[in-house]
Image (cartoon, rainbow over all chains, first blue to last red; front, side, top):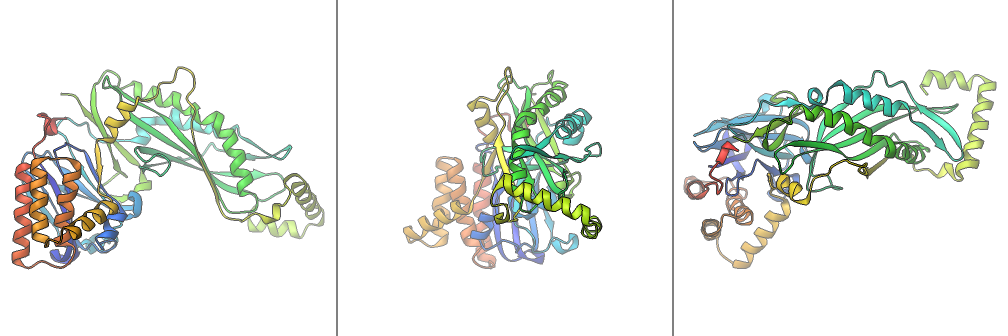
Length: 286
Length: 155
């Protein structure tokens, strides 16, 4: 039981190649191929065709190519068929020629649920909790109140992923970015993003659980960037956890089902950008 | 503040004076404000759990992490170093890596096998004989790659 992929330097399976295996002993769901691996094999931005093979006892799977390191940017998914080798002779046909800087092999399971877009899973109550929490932020710099967050009623969170980030290198996260504007009194406005890292896991009893594990901000460059970032972090330290209630409520709908494992797929379709969304795949106990 | 607003502000002496006062106030409050780097700022911090909120146990996090495996550049570099230390040719390294994987199908031995195959394939385009060596290694690997958990892809 094995899935393996070969990435070729040239079109039509020609030239040098790199070889990546997702074995079943021990059984894994994902095989990550970071940029450092492609660099060492001198294959970064060098893939022009590929093959993916699955043995007959597999259910199926994918190799996913990413344009940027750390499984970010544009992506393209290539499925495998049990007992066959699937070939893609020209990555230029999808504008992915010599653009791969990281990759991922994914194993599918017979008892997995259809992928669920995270935006659907978390629903409007999560978005509303975030709007409430961001809308109530006042920024004080020095001794006085200085600015507020611009109206967030039209806030559209960006749901994506962050895989093994430096600050938490053993976890895969749902990464929620919320672009906002800080309106400062008699001063220049600053764009910023409030950011949440949501960790989902299967507990010992097979129940799907999740919570906001990390929070953060990004503030556009300016002489007040550091001051605004510090002030936002002070506010978010109290409000970031308020997202846990809607997360628990959303996951509560699944409590009657016992799961064995979970994994994520990027975006909404077989080709897209990781910022298009992220999909959760739950594998049930038989 | 958008450019058109800024332009209007510059042309309005009263508002410009107000802005100057604000700048003076900021400087008093923040000290050497003009020394800011003007680079974007980013911050990250852990969320402290509230009362009654559950967090995963170390075992649950480990089980989640064991869902995945990573072949880093360091893995390939270390394998390449060890192969060089052996002083064997690529085919011998491949044969030894296959044997090690059959003896113990661990992640570490899988990475060695993967590195041994890549040592052959990533250096140059293969001729028919080279392809056959790699194909045999892959077939041997597949026949030995059986899940320890009888459930396999059933979870």
